[in-house]
Length: 148
Image (cartoon, rainbow, N blue to C red; front, side):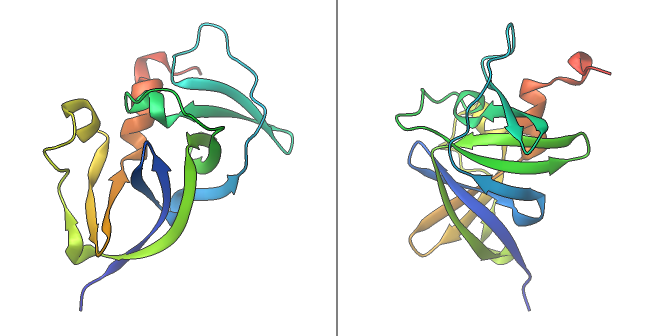
């Protein structure tokens, strides 16, 4: 009997990505962001999440994609350091994916993108790229720049 994994899916530049559903706190529509001076290009700004200040990370910038043609949606994830919002083009569904369909990142991805992707789950109608959230956030917040 093979095991399964539930993934919250979202779209960036026409590609379907997924994050383990246990990492996702909530999904939000477009939020007003406050810019952060001198921040990385991937830091879109800060959002107010019911009184809590949350950093909004533009996953398109992290993955080296161009600007979004539409206002981004927010996938708020839980990290040990607190919530972080990942900006995406569109929200998909929560899918239960069979681990037997998982493969290493495809060679068609750029080398930089491949380091941010754990692998791909094959579907009947395409695939879901499983993003490595820790690796993606490390490109924005290297350990040497962590604020204490």
